[in-house]
Image (cartoon, rainbow, N blue to C red; front, side, top):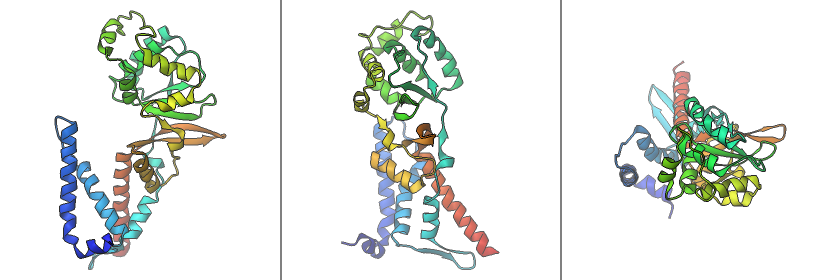
Length: 291
């Protein structure tokens, strides 16, 4: 059955379909959160697939307001989707963990105050301590900017990364609250031993031993192959996010043959940018036809 032809003949279904999509979206948010707040971006997310699909499928090819504006929808959308993502990349400085676990944890308050976003680990480096890494993550999570843990190889190239919150939830033990009370940051009373933070110890040992397979098996790992470069177009990156089921992707830049981590591109920011690009294209065509 040709769905495009069917929609053309039954265009009245589009409004109910949009409403149904929005209702399902609201229901899902209600299941996942106590307080449901519908933001403009939620409506936009529900609406955009219909608009883009109808235009790209040729259901409406031209918008024309006599005496005001006339344009081909495909031209506008293709132009916006082909734009590179470089301006939407959130460039993030990377903070490397120090070798001495006891002195390094005293840096945590400063990192929180400075809004540290990323902690990095280098494969094969032997200075990591499971208890110190546990303390870093559990205290830095109180800072909203802290979002990612990056794994680099010996040359500084990106191997992969994790969401810091997901990684912490996976590696923390069931008695984590007790550990937080027993080993506070202030006053500092020492670090938990490897048995108390067994999963964190295993994680740091995998880094020290350059065990890439073990690191890749940790849930939520985003590998180097999923990264994009700043010149990738928006359509390509959004398609890649959809393919991997992610709301963000790492961005790399090749410097002297080394693919270095540059930052993150997020679906919400990319979608908003795409809408603005379409709006600019429309405004440009309107002005051109008005002259």
